[in-house]
Length: 239
Image (cartoon, rainbow, N blue to C red; front, side):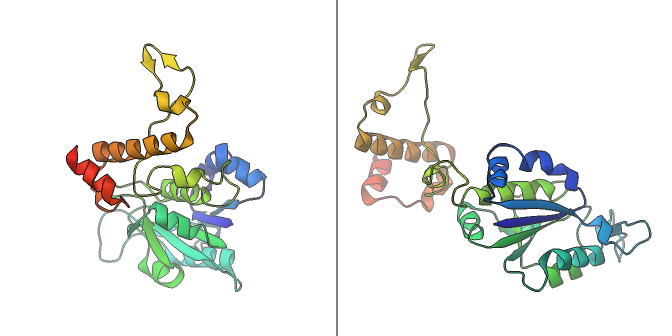
């Protein structure tokens, strides 16, 4: 997959994109990620990418022209993918959405800044808007990093185990079960015996129950949409 990020702060990305799982995936050629500076596409003398909003108001608005030309430059006639604006009006990013985006050949992520983006740029060169949550950031760069990391985990080969993304929190509507590693006993706190039993059926059953309990404790709202069996629903009611 190829991901291109349009931004006025391209230097923010390299340290994040070169580290950990994303860094290894890039080195292996599993994913091609690059940040493209919007500023050189500006037709203004000083290459500025913002101006005062028509109608007045506080702050500045990103110009449509540099964004439109930058988008045209990175997509071209043969573009086959999705053009996404990271903004507060979009649908919230979910595991299901990330999994769907991972099926695309190419993504172009547009990072907004200042008080917003000239609507003509969004109308002409964006396919959809995505939000990463109901809070305010100084720009779309951090949101683009989050989306990139989330999507990359569903690209075959990026994670060490093919099952990993399906066993993590939210993959089946539940939070993940508790995890343990060595030593077996630490400061009097013991690892659950079932995890040391070698009985994979018991371990799967224990993890499922713990996932449901964790979700009930920390995010009970998720249980309304979680895929629970009739027995599990009854078990929760009896607790």
